[in-house]
Amino acid sequence: MRIESGQTAADAERMETIRMLRDSAIAFLGADLGRVRRLRFQDTGFDRATWREMCGLGWLGVRIPEAQGGLGFGMQEYVALATELGAALVPEPLILVGLSARCLPDDELLNVLSGERIILPAWQEVANALADAPAHTTFDGRKLIGEKRFVMNARGVDAYLVTTSSGLALVEATTQGVSLSTEKTQDGGHFGTLRFDGAVAKAIPVAPFDEAVADATLASAAYLFGLSERAFRLTIDYLKIRRQFGKPIGAFQALQHRAVDLYLELALTRASVESAATTIDAKASIAQQQAAVSRAKARASRCGALVCREAIQMHGAIGYTDEADIGLFLRKAMTLINHFGSERAHRARYVALMKVA
Image (tube, rainbow, N blue to C red):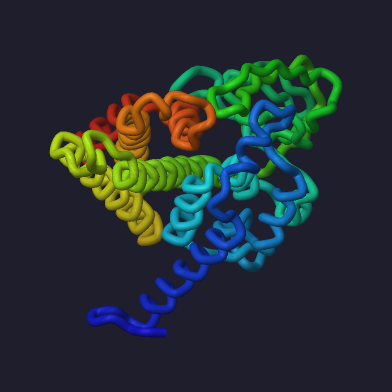
């Protein structure tokens, strides 16, 4: 382990842990997008066997304390992993189930961390709802009544962790009184709408739900950054090999200027995501953490839309075909830029928090 100038031994050890986590993710996920293509528009949209392998690597427990069977890492490690998940366009719901896992009691957590059970969070009732949005779904300690929307990849899971006006409730997917309707998304997955008509559920003790949503929101921003960064790299590679008028199109100044603009956008997004992770790890005030997360998610949403749109245009006509891999990145970005709150919603929250500060 090499210690750089100005680093402590603890800092160097942490950087080494992050590097190893990234390397293991890259080695496991690979560069081939064939698996992503095969899973598109399938019933669940992800592969349960691969899911169990990922859980076996400990990825689901990155933010779970070691005493509860997790890895006990901080947000810097989590965003490093999420960035690689985005670069590989991983369809498995690690970020979402990781949110649920943060809130589950030990008797429910073990089977989730092992990959045997998949529990998705169901907390949004209107578009662009953030963690502090009021829940109108009711729970009397036994039965659920209400509706939840925008539950990503809602089919083929075992249970849902539901926010209600009186706390969290855990309901099995097959319980009588639970109905699910879905709508396809651009990336080949789906959003689900859950309706509860007196479904029997289990009360979950007080849990750090807002903190878990903040972690998941920042992880989603890191995922967006990862897919944007890889889309940019693919585009730069294409500009070097595609020839027009006897030379690579990357030699044309107009495209060089556009590429530089995207590079700067990516650099600013990386800085925002890493700054937010550091803010959470430093246990700053809740307002500071929320502001940092909103800044990162707003910038990542903008970056994902801009980089992928420009990447398609710089690929030319081939970029608009489904066979071109670059289109997969645009489709995923279109699905995620408003997930966990849109750019506009997070900018508004950031401004409000800055006024308070």
